Image (tube, rainbow, N blue to C red; front, side):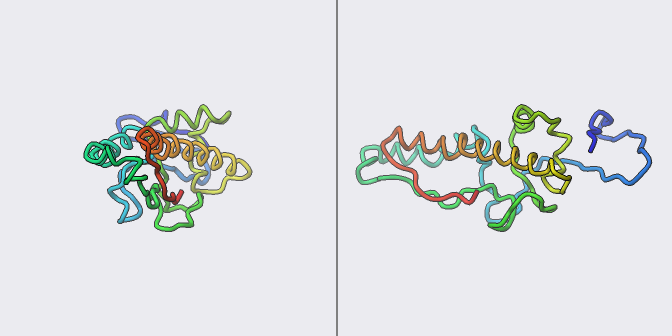
Length: 173
């Protein structure tokens, strides 16, 4: 694997292709979701997106019913929040068609968590590349899971806790 981004200029790739067979990977950030029913979900990895979700959904309920919080209203139920990146509950990394969760700054976090040139190994999230594949996938899932916790469930849980209610339910991820 080699990183050829230094050969990009003006949206075009200028690279003298070395001898042999090559596969070039393009990584595209998209808002497209693989599940139609979750296509309008927020990105649970983005702190500001989750904050806006809280402000538009949870906060109006609190403003209207604050005297009942912790009494009549014991909590909020969340049903299967997820990335929506693959139309199945069995969504292990290594599936070519799978869109993978992404957030601003994710590549920098991944690079800081790994001793490797992480961006060079991004294709291994979809394809096998020997023994290093497990390390790349583990690091990715570890970081993404932590971001999901910090920015989604952690942020909502803190909001609920500060108002004397619980957040209950289950996540798909």
